[in-house]
Amino acid sequence: MKRTIITVVGKDTVGIIAKVCTYLANNRINILDISQTIVQGFFNMMMIVDLEDATKPFADVSSELIGVGEEIGVVIHCQKEEIFDSMHRI
Amino acid sequence: MINIHEVSETNKMIEKENLDVRTITLGISLLDCISDDPDTLKARIYDKITKSAERLVPVGKEIENDFGIPIVNKRISVTPISLVGASACRGPEDFAGLARTLDEAAKAVGVNFIGGFSALVSKGMTPSDVNLINSIPSALSETDVVCSSVNVGSSKTGIDMDAVRLMGSIIKKTAQATQDRQSLGCAKLVVFCNAPDDNPFMAGAFHGVTEGDMVINVGVSGPGVVKTAISRIHGESFETLCETIKKTAFKVTRVGQLVAKEASRRLGIPFGIVDLSLAPTPAIGDSVADILTEMGLQYAGAPGTTAALALLNDQVKKGGVMASSYVGGLSGAFIPVSEDQGMVDSVNAGCLTLEKLEAMTCVCSVGLDMIAVPGDTSEYTISGIIADEMAIGMVNQKTTAVRIIPAYGRKAGDSVEFGGLLGHAPVIRVNPFSCEEFIKREGRIPAPIHSFKN
Image (cartoon, rainbow over the protein chains, first blue to last red):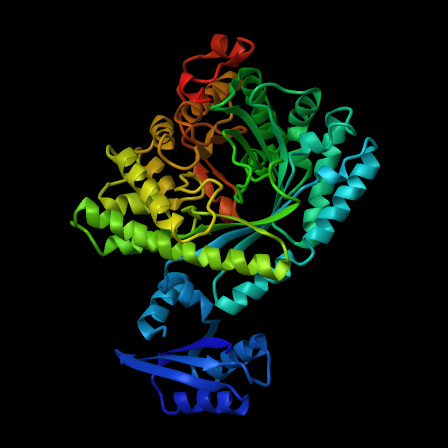
């Protein structure tokens, strides 16, 4: 497992999840968990994904997802899970 | 599994509260470069640094991208050069030549500072130490990224007052030699008591002789994160205040531990320590002074400041110690003036004086840091300020340091601008009364009685 956290933040609009999921599917990235909230019209989503079978290395996925975010006007970050585990789990 | 609130909390710290890893510092021993021929020595030093640190900057960037955490600086510390150059260097000019070699090697691998142009003279100075110290003004004016430090005292050995006297004059000469850059040379020069061997922070980093061949040390930072956490608990008890700081320091340090372990694994270099420091930057909100005001002081420097800082420093250590497998370096709150906008505001408001800063250094992690004083401050007065600070460190068995800038041609009330992380500083008033006769005495101050623990 190469667990990675993808966060998507921005103004809510049609097709954000579809667009991100399409990119992930096309690159053989498996989604393990999705949570999503909308606060004051702002879309806030977190995905836990597994890059084990991904067709591209982490660095490419990360920079291409930033590009996908720019196309639909949201900010997408891609971070390896360890930073969150380190901070929030003993 | 990690939930959305935990992810948002971490990312908010990074994006809005200036959480970052301040530095990955690669310590390199240069003891195996020693030669009695200056050119051979220089070639060996250049080769060892450039080969050892070749991947430091790219690996640092890789870790930044993987975890989404900024790593502000990638740096190198080396064995104190007074030891490395002892047999090759015949005079100060030879040592200045070694400084230029360090500068070239550091620039070749893309790090932003290299520390270790240093001498450890807490009990006495060898001819090599004296030559290195005398070369500091030209070494720091002819190089861009070399940092220098001199350890003039320790709790075990006492204070070498001959070195203290010499450093007063060297700081003045360094200010003069870099007058065209607002005396910037002095910002790269620290005088220490009880200098740690594994400090990753500049300008005082060097690779101690007790260390292995190479080591990765990491310095974390996060004044903005602590400040934001405290802003949510106005009016609560000291217990709540301390718990909040401790928990926040724990989280910040865990990130440092992760980065240190990753850097060590990817570079194949042993992990040394995480330095649990609250290191401010001139960025708004990234200020230790702001933490103190958030605790309930009108400005840093108001009565109560020393107590507030003591509490902060202790809780940062308590929170951080459990978060890392090895802690070291300076570990605590830094209180530089020019690098902390809140401190600058306090000085400008007339609340923070040199004397209050000195009191604060009794309970913080380092000492009088990045303080601009009038250019006409005498070398004896500077030595007197150093001696006071060294005495605090010696008696309290803690690290203390002086990084003071007698800004050439400036007087109290003016300001100096260093730019970047070094920031800008108001020139602060210095007590005008003389200590010349005291400083002119030769020899050393003996170690305090409580250092004899054997």
